[in-house]
Length: 439
Image 1 (cartoon, rainbow, N blue to C red):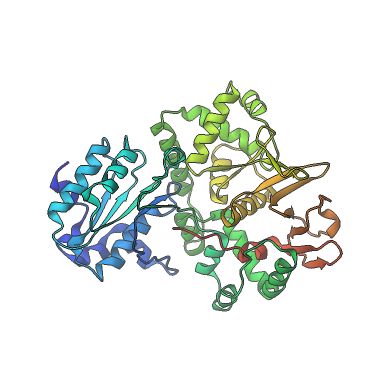
Image 2 (spheres, rainbow, N blue to C red):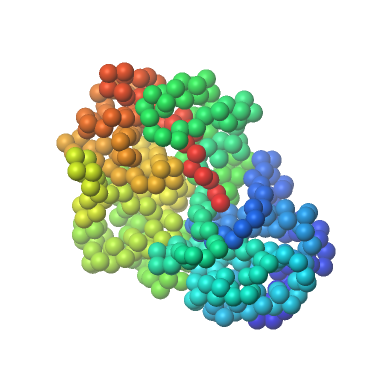
């Protein structure tokens, strides 16, 4: 590690305006629809999938800071090529020598594949090296965080996920819809409240449906949605880049690309359906249910997939050993792997995955019920069922005994007082959820 390694990544130390020449900053500022961020004081470990925009996020925070602090007090460093945790620590030490006096701001990008990165973070936070400094640290794998969330240390762990549908609409919708969205929020899953919000947004239904049609193609991935919304279509290179980035992470973790692809094919073939790890292993020729579980957990750690488990409603017990469902964390991921692995996905299944992810980001624990008629999602005392078809009716909702019932439809809106059951178009319901968004 040399001083030159830091200097080359921080040209604003010599000339503040050079941040505007950074490729990612320039691209963000040239957009017709700008996705910008403002700096928040504190120490953060930010984890999210590859290509969700974490590096652009850090660079835009640097730009924001440079308007207020000494440029030499701000360091960005891409950690991809570091050998081990000792080089991470050394980078901070070198910046101490170069950065001058006063409070300093460090942005360490993509640390989670640096060998022993957790040791570096703990050492820095526990030593005088952290004094007078603010750290933003990003990574694309949450696998290590299952073992270590830095308890008792002055750092917060945040997810940086692709934009949700509300954030997507905030970028591309009309000013009238944007103002309406500021007034709606479904903080608890209550059928009557979901119906009220749906009725309020129904006047914008055509615009929302057009935006949702785009969102299920591009998801919340900036490169994909800017190409689609400002360039006319998502390029083949963008699909391939997303696929290759995931494969790169798989190999960095010492796993087999072939087995990972086989697992993803198996998930796609069962998309929206429950399955066991044994059946997944057998039908995909992975070999062992233990291998299937290992690779599934890896994909969850990379923020690519998310598992949903059954719940026994009378006993209110989650059945972790029973068959599960698995969805991608973003529709663009589903579109990418479906396209490259040549497994077609029905749009209703795609929308179901979007709903599951939005519910999870908003409320945390989300399960499903596998009774005589399966219920897509269970969140506490509420059930959520999707009927993505031309017409739906209250009878499409399974009888489960849950007090709050929300039937998500393609276009139908209504409320059944007797059953406390709301029918709400799925895109309108998603706009009522505030998932926290990217960092």
